[in-house]
Length: 91
Ligand code: SF4
Image (cartoon, rainbow, N blue to C red; front, side, top):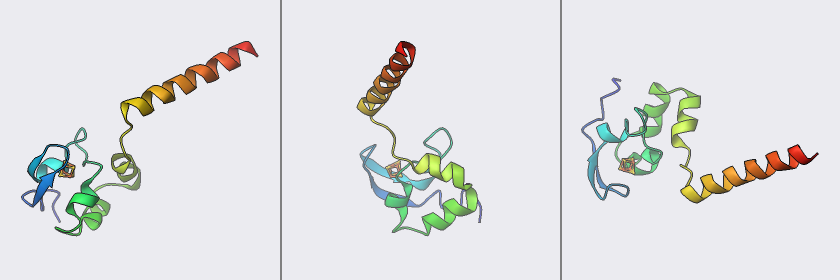
């Protein structure tokens, strides 16, 4: 099956953009890779998990399906790293 086979399939409401959207947008919206929510949004439209397994390797799927970190998560992660670095410098 071609990569663009389902590009014209519409999801009635994108929670990120607040509008109807076609899969052709969703499968490229993370720097050319699919949106992290494609399984949720398109499961009722076509066998999206099979489509992803056919066109993307396991590592790619793990990366683009991962929940993106919030800004607060990123800040806390950075603070943890800084604190860990300071503890290492003192010892
Ligand atoms: S897969 Fe992502 S971009 Fe596409 S409709 Fe769902 S939330 Fe929106």
